[in-house]
Length: 107
Image (tube, rainbow, N blue to C red; front, side):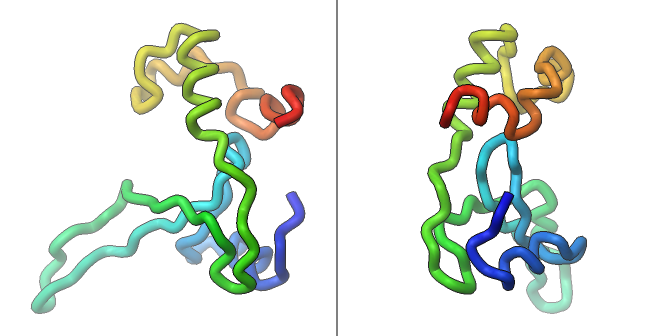
């Protein structure tokens, strides 16, 4: 996927950068960093992400996330009861874990 600016393109290629792109959801995310208070770990935030709507460097608005459309489709088509259940997600074909599914639909 082409990025809106070179700064974003470089950032999402770096392994230690908290910004990443989920192609199957057409979504940019920011991983939250651990929170410390008084030298003690208060929250590791290891599973917490925020969806970005704009590029933090150039301000370009990102395309609409397809999270809801993806969830609806995999729940209906593949009888997935919970998209948060890793075992349930094994029912989902590989194409639905890439941008292929939404490109085929013209989204």
